[in-house]
Amino acid sequence: MSLKNFMASEKGTVSSLVALLMLVLIGALALVTDAGLLYINQGKMLNAIDSAVLAGVRELPGNSEQALETAAHYGIINGVAAEEASYQLDNGQRSITGHAERQVELFFARALGITSKNVSVSAQARIAPVSSTGGVVPFGVLEDDFIFGEEIVLKEGAGDQDYWGWFGALRLGGSGAHVYRDNIKYGYSEEVSIGDIIEIEAGNMSGPTKVGVEHRIDQCDHIPRCNIDSYREGCSRILILPIINIESINESGHPFSVRVKGFGAFLVEEYIGNGTENQVRGSFVRYVIPGGSDSEAADFGLYGVQLIE
Ligand SMILES: [Zn+2]
Image 1 (tube, rainbow, N blue to C red):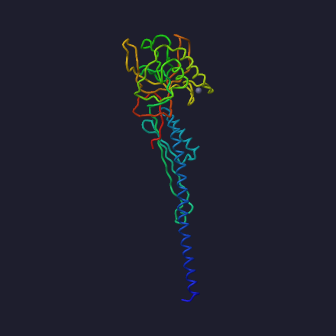
Image 2 (cartoon, rainbow, N blue to C red):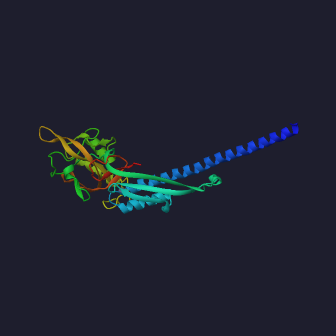
């Protein structure tokens, strides 16, 4: 082979090698770019569907239509179009499932004859009775006395209590009027769980009850002021209360400790009177918090939310 011919054939080999490399590179680029596109779409859609079902489930149980509307709304504001998504209620209106599908247009894969690919995501969120929570207010409500959804007197200064000398006050994190009052004002800082045994706090405690409850009522600056028909999430008027049974009675026949059966949300509307005349009025309402939940736990209208899929 002459030198000239040799050079020419080398050139040919090099240029076809370059061409081949280019093709591989473009192919790789196509894969990476298109895969990235699918990946980004899937991530965004999943985030949107997660927020949609988490927002919607907070309306359950009860407001099924509102739950589906809220989910659809959150899906849209998080970037999933209405026609891409569908939502449904399951588990006896205790959970909501969202599903979204999108045709993603591809760029480089077109060279291989693939113009688009279907991306789909789904998520499910559930509510269940709260089994463990912080922020508990130290008024124990006997399971037998629990009434949901109508105005009741939570704590009465004089008589009418089932157990003489005990007015429903509980010792959370220590005894004494200051601890009791601060637990009303701010909620007890530690977690309380179903099955926990709590000592009772004897006596009327009307002074600290008044200070604590009035603080909770006054802290609501929502307009209109929160009431049992309309209340805002996170409002200070919503008291997380343990629903209890008597656990032990002392020698004189007075309750000594209680056992936590579950939790309720009490919307406190007013504090009236003083001393033996004092009353705390309000109503147990349906409410959702981020606390630990358990679908087997007793249901007193306070729920925790979790993503289960
Ligand atoms: Zn409020």
